[in-house]
Image (cartoon, helix red, strand yellow):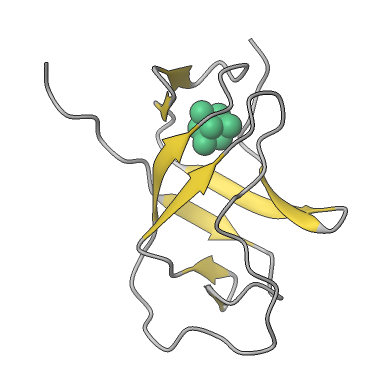
Length: 96
Ligand code: SF4
């Protein structure tokens, strides 16, 4: 079986996250989950910010309720992340 392509994180507007710089995520990869809610598990609220400016991709996603999810990985062409209450969510999530 071939390896899964990792979708890019095209945009993230959670500016209070350590990995955010200029509305982009610069963590090498992020994880999304729980099962029913597409929370970004990589979000770290922090006044400081990452120094490097590489692009980010979706590693694992545990939100099996999403129509883009296959085998707990993401099949979307790309995703966007945004602020929700006091955390970050995948905004590309669509329920099956
Ligand atoms: S689009 Fe769906 S499968 Fe992809 S990261 Fe977001 S919630 Fe997970």
